[in-house]
Length: 139
Image (cartoon, rainbow, N blue to C red; front, side, top):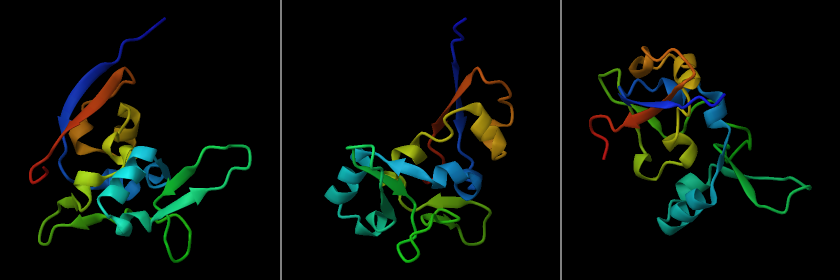
């Protein structure tokens, strides 16, 4: 049986939960398009948090994000997330060039519910795809 997924549009409330508590998001891969954009834009600050994946069985180049450039371990929280002073709101400081893994998060309702996304509280079943709209102050 094929179940058609219904897309639900929600507005990001900038709570930062996805960027603070989604370990698989923090241990994602950079796409070739991500790398090309960061190189083109001269974002070596971002590139410093990218590490190569060594896979002897693969000829494809793959790269992990977000790897601490000093320890070479995965970071525990997104290095680009900042809390706005005097508020409970968070801001992605690389919003315009954030990687595909971040742009596509949450890829399913289960992910949104797992991090207790307040914008997705009403989404309860797996037949829903979430499509985020830009929040205030996001271009």
